[in-house]
Length: 313
Image (cartoon, rainbow, N blue to C red; front, side, top):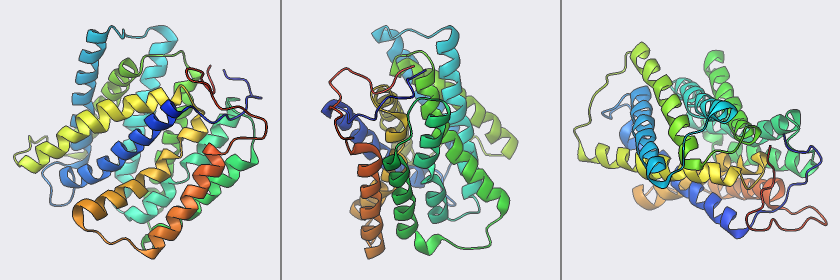
């Protein structure tokens, strides 16, 4: 377990570049999911996610075999399995279930609580020490999402759906803590197991939910699913685990508020969606939150040297 007195240290350029690449690829995931799983699309939600994760797990397992990444055992294997249960199986199941009724805007605000929840869990697990900037950054991030999606914050939503979204946020937050609380596993092997476990969970849910286990016929569906498997899962989640090993979980969790911003920018570029003043104002608040909560260097703290991790079990 990491030392509770450990300071948040700004990461090196390689880690920041990996983090930025992950956020951009994950933002592309939002666009691709719209083409794969929507009201008029070919694939039902749980089946779309399950098939994506299981295919990605097979690709990652093959890569791990080629590069000699090896498969973990003991506590390391348990950590990889929990990573899959929380980060892919439970989190995506709760998110998909809640978003069937709740608007995407309100869902984004709920998921914007992930940095605050991660910070709280990191304190409970004694991986990080309390920092006012961690708390303030999280508040700014939630406020920014509320401004961006203010038109979607409708009232009268079912309590069960709201609780489902909150449960998704809790799972996403605890995922980063789990990765750091267990012995290190190569990012490729970690995701081969995690995506495999999560994919199997979602496959069971797809069957129970009555999803059609259809094979897509349209070229656009194949292209979108290929993106989700290779770039959006194999590459993106490998980068996610890589960054988590070199930075604090609370800092990395800000990807959850940056991804919607990237998705909106990509939609504006690719699908001619309008950029509003609310988006601009909310984005400024989110970026302030990211700077204060993740990037701001505490007084007297050096930059993180290449190869040094900010927090390790």
